[in-house]
Length: 616
Ligand SMILES: Cc1cc2nc3c(=O)[nH]c(=O)nc-3n(C[C@H](O)[C@H](O)[C@H](O)COP(=O)(O)OP(=O)(O)OC[C@H]3O[C@@H](n4cnc5c(N)ncnc54)[C@H](O)[C@@H]3O)c2cc1C
Image 1 (cartoon, rainbow, N blue to C red):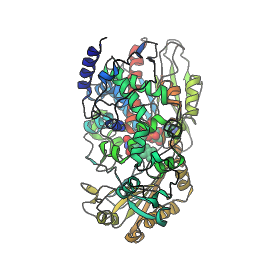
Image 2: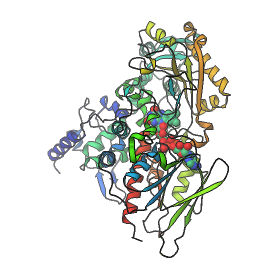
Image 3: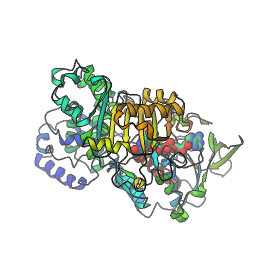
Image 4: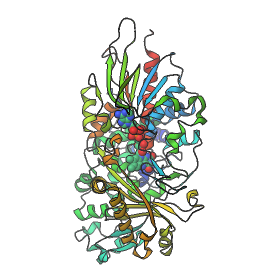
């Protein structure tokens, strides 16, 4: 193919992707676009077909994007966008034969979406949920934990603009109103800086830029090349080669849009999946230990042992620059309205209200051999509150629980060895959140007096680590009250274990004292009224973990296996009967979008299995 032909193909493809659904995760691409690189020689699909190969050297300069063109950067999940939106917004999948049954384990977002779409396709749907509510890791605290009218999120709290699946259901079900979520960090507190002096984040950045000697005392061994840069600047520079590789692969792939996305991510994965965030920064970007520490202390949400690709994709969470472009929003009346929409009477005949059995903890799954002409069935056994065991038989089963919870469910025969290994091995992250209710939104004055608006984030090296002061403007919770609920602590890994190990009362007290320490002039302890916390390390139904984030090498090793169904009948036939949903089995870990993505993949798989089954 001539260079000019390639350019015209790329131009055409760009028109297709020019949508607001571009990825916040890669808004770094605004900053860096091209230059020479040579990492991947050839990319093949799973059947070995060559999708992209070297030989582009002469072509790349002609088709690299201009540095200010980020509109063609897409999230990995967008390769399935059209087919998944078709399911949600279209007339629904073709009806399956009457009497086709499916049992779904778990009524979190993934189980609910799978149940809803399969019900639309005329499956007879049964959802077994161990708790007494829907939503799983979408959990909103309100009255009676907080004063009437107030709420705060124990799990999911915000939705980026490009999460097209989350937005699709919010739009389709007309679920209350979205309004902006403030991503910007406004303050930072480092105990070692002037004996613990709180800085505005703008001031912190200025001090970094100006190589302020007092601040640099905390990071005395920064390399000369690391001085005079903000955390964002350091990180953007560090990921430059990854961004360039992505751009090169994406823009020079000669296929349709979904394939271009796949090629670009496959190439990036081939080269960088072996790194954790820490090992990438140390070994590839050659950061000094002090630069690593600065990045950790200067940001929210830094988990160094996450796989590098996961961290890179979600780096906008730790960046004031990229965080702003993410178009993050929240729901006026709480995130739990999303799962609740699936059981709402507004769904009429499609409501899942009566399809769910609550208080039903699945303990065992049995593959029942067919007898005579009868088709094979799967028996799902579950425990109810009395301790009694009940069971339900169905044609298909969908697991929609985290692996960490699934491990406690026994079965009559194992899944494939690679899937069993994934269930044991795939990495999860721990989170503890502490939420505090104050009689007065004291922080608004603090922010105001420093020209920081009225809300936003605060990072610190105290046990609370990251605080999110809720948006004031347009927040209907605050229309009739001076009160407010703050996410005082959002902690990960060891920090989450430390707070999680405390008694609930002590956790609340420590969080309130930490905030009082950071903003002493506000004298906030006098306004404290109530507190609640969500400790994922001890949340049994979440499997003692918050969400999946692959460790190094796990994306390459496991993702495909995790998305492949099992228990074919006859064995080795490809007529699968067990499917795997849940946020972990997706491209978008730690997000509702991922839970929906995995559910819709299972819907397609189960529908295909049901419609291609030999008739009885
Ligand atoms: C702290 C935190 C913050 C987050 N922030 C965001 C955010 O801001 N935006 C966003 O989009 N996403 C966010 N997420 C991610 C999002 O909440 C999850 O990805 C999503 O809710 C997972 O849904 P799921 O259906 O896969 O799993 P779950 O929600 O875990 O659902 C599984 C269900 O199975 C049930 N169950 C478990 N074991 C059994 C059993 N043996 N038998 C029967 N039932 C069982 C559980 O009770 C649960 O209801 C966050 C998650 C956490 C933890």
